[in-house]
Image 1 (tube, rainbow, N blue to C red):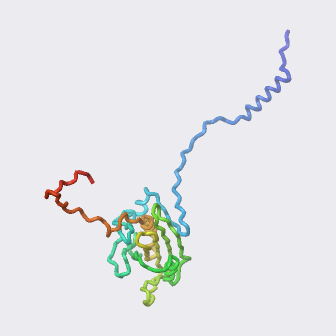
Image 2 (image 1 turned 60 degrees about the vertical axis):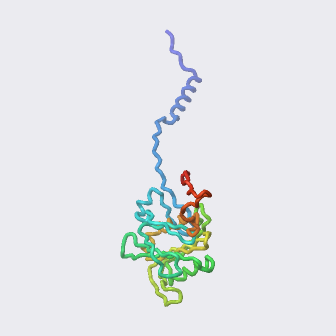
Image 3 (image 1 turned 45 degrees about the vertical axis):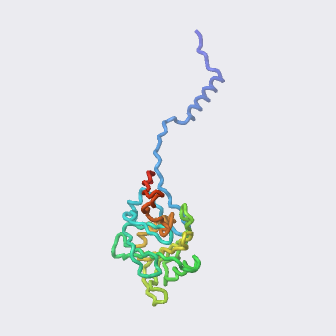
Length: 254
């Protein structure tokens, strides 16, 4: 009778190593893929002033009528856009190039703001910013100032924002202090006819609601391709030819 063969020592070692490797091998379960969540665009850096830049597809939903352009305005070789409910008025001061009423967005009790556009004012940018801020008897926090280069234009805009009690009287008149007011100011340099000043003042609540509309107005300032006074006259009757016949109209398309 033959006895069964016993495994050798080397065989036992190999079996032990194989068992250890199998035990340490990680599980090969299928990896489940999770769809990536699209990230909302971050606001563009804008220096000292916080400006909310909305994605184009969300402007209508978040701004309502502010996203709908009513008309284009022209002043000193610049073109600006007005939202549909912003109302251009006849300026009640000869120093004003344009005057626009800014209605409240959600509550008539807030009261309207007023945008005034002027030009030909002397002094440096810093002096004019200081003059605007000095019109506040007191301010809530520190007024902010920011330089903005308008994309694809030579226009450089210095913006200033201040909130507090505003002196609404004309220069030289008795102070007329109105509390709870906000100023949005923009000094636009680089236009074809000199520096232009955009100054909007109104109740803090109204101006807060119109903050994005103001930003769109300023960022969409453009230089007119040709000043309005230099537009070519409409075509008139053609001069007769040498034989006295009227020339035939051109066959070229515009």
